[in-house]
Length: 604
Image (cartoon, rainbow, N blue to C red; front, side, top):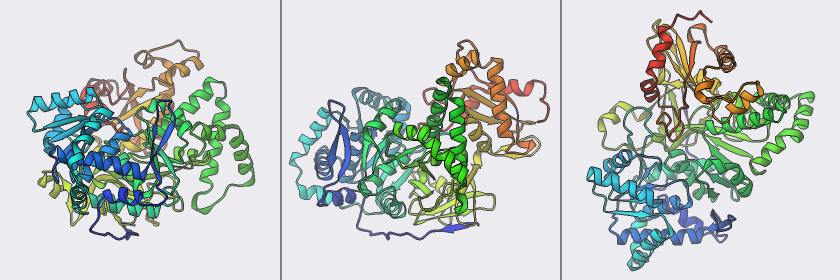
């Protein structure tokens, strides 16, 4: 199949914008809880729709009183927290446009987002955020007039300032935006070059939210709950945040993923959303803990059974009696404990931001958590396609959502159009012409559509490696399999213009101590472990397994374990945990040269 077009389930109503979701929820007789916040004792307390709307309106009036006009840009820099969403909707109620800033951003990155977008004001979560914003503003001479902290005192300042703005003035401002109006400028996380501002409209959020709710009712149902831990500056979390309000789903927030398990247990969500690396870490942590406790063989058998049980359901099949009995036994021994560790009520997970891989997808389905893998970009307001509970093919990223379309170009590139696609790149008309053809947006990804319209991602067009022998290699297929190993943290496949394919590998700092102890090795640092014979043999075995899925010309024939991990803090990962290949190649180019200056390895 070369093209799949799915008509919308919910038609557009032009006189509408994202703020209508808040108004509609607040006007329901049930006054549903839209959010939950921790009180001083750490207990979760409901924030109901009427109270949320009232506070949004107070802050929006404060913004108006402070000079924020229709269409003005306002920056938001904060960790993932309730106040992020409160301020976001207040900006929209005031008729303005929000500009997210990752809370890990440097002053130069902050200055770019605020300066390029033309922001005249900004929010920072804390005093340190405010200081960084002011440093950025002063260093570049930006026309940012106000910087507010998202603390109780900072927001109270706005609430008080808005007392003189009437309800009629606010309603006129709130209702002025249409589906065509700009809602936000989200800057791409920048794996290549300087971030580009993606113009997402109210229509993108409204149309995509309403059609997603209609298509995935089993997940986004009244009474459903989720806990948000991904950065709200990223389009994936931002879209789900709006979608949750549209669906009446309750959201709790946790800013630190290190507290995720206790937060899951206390909040007890019915679904979660995460990037593939989070699912890899959950699996690898469970495996490592089992091995450290001497239960590695039991866990391995349980994992194999879960994967086999899930795979048996492919194409409408079902597992045989023996497999069902083993699955039931491991459910009592292993799977139930894993579900309890995640709160005990999770039925679904939504995965985006990169390929998950079949093995992990089948594992989580087999333990009772169906991972609905989807695909999208900042430019597409997140999801273009997604698996749904009633239409799922593990290993794919699903079929296009209602209102979206996918086309596979002659060179394999994925093109898309529909309610998800942005208005354009902010002040980059030349890039607009490059990335759109007859209304179809060029995603830059390579993929395939199966006969049922399910999409599979096979690589990134700009990341395709062409060896000296002219062989095209998609690194993702190898990297995803290698990175799934508990001892491996990151891997970057290299070989552009070179005689063979190689790889840079980093080790997982949390998994390493237990692995060394189980293998009778002394405690070693990450740098020291890279030279350890057993560690290298293990990494080689992992690579050998991955090589079995590709041709000899595509196989990794040499690797190096680099002495440090690739992290967001080191500048080698984006906030959504994608590898910045250009940065890795710049910082570890000498290691790559060592690989290719060494004696040529024998063919695999």
